[in-house]
Image (spheres, rainbow, N blue to C red):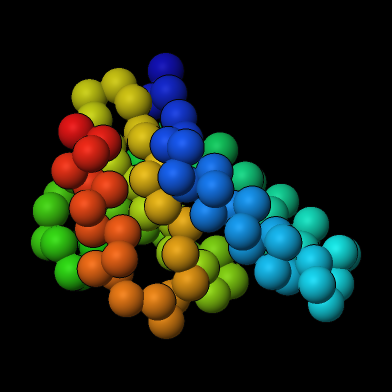
Length: 104
């Protein structure tokens, strides 16, 4: 049996903000991006180590998967995966690094 995948409130806010931003130009593409983010998060329960270690942190338990130009950042625990952020790939990681401590 795989890990349980849970979302932090901040990560859910990130997805809402991404959808709102993209929807200003195209509701279709906003839905496409959000659906791909959700699909990727669902695949984590069976393959949590598939994502790369976040280079800014270098910790084995904090990993990321790329969805289009967004980074889906998650923490792997014994039986739970917590999605802690979904940020644009060009955004500085420092702005969300404090979430890693809060999530522990």
